[in-house]
Length: 131
Image (tube, rainbow, N blue to C red):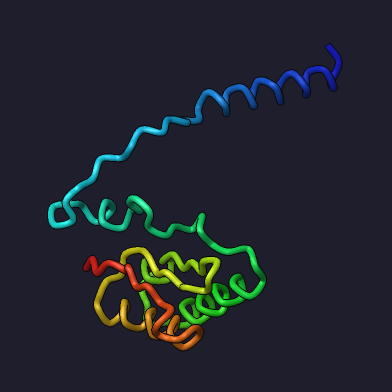
């Protein structure tokens, strides 16, 4: 078997395995009570909450997200978890903040950075304080 045929066969096999590994079920996710949920459960999206998939592709909205991300990354007072928070600018210019932070001060600082870019009325701060 020549090299090209083996490469094509291998690519087909890898592609088939990837399809088998995909879970395309549309089964609804079980809701959990936020008071008893683990930190990972509290920060996971539910229902129609904004996720990274909701990021607008317009250059203006991408620039908004990038500007806020740079401000967050440049703040040495923030924890690694805070710096890894999700920042999404949707199609109407609303910025949603999601993820876990170590303190209310971190939550407020990231919210203030977003508000400085788009205004406080356009920021949805869903960061969760998880010391």
